[in-house]
Length: 160
Image (tube, rainbow, N blue to C red; front, side, top):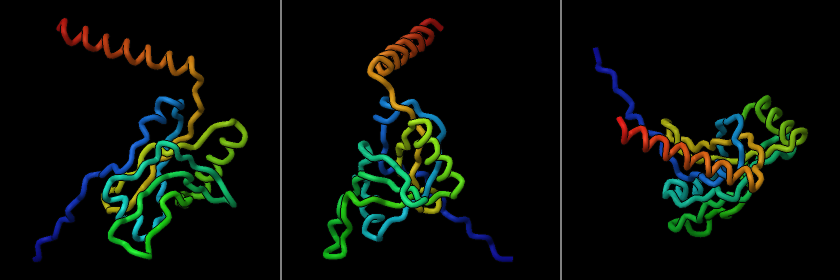
């Protein structure tokens, strides 16, 4: 009998993280979406210099697109390079896309990307969330609550 080869599983490599989104929005339901990329975009993403802090997702013609995300040009590619801020198609099931677009239209919610990462199979994925924007006083309240929880944990740790 031949010994079975075990696939070398790669850990989830986060390429871009939108930490600001958790502060600016109340995050609701989170979805995982594939992303349609060109060859040079994949190589540029692997360098880890992409940013999604100002990007958002929106529906267009029954499809979901990621707008204003920045994937830098791949330096080793010459004339076949990609445009850094082009809209990128998100790959999701139709039911999920419909759910997101209805929530955006009816409830005034926003679809924000939380992170871009490569999964175990090496495919680029985007974690998007249905979110509701916070007002300035909500942000201050969230900061107070976070600081209080941090102080509370510190006190509990020091006592026992």
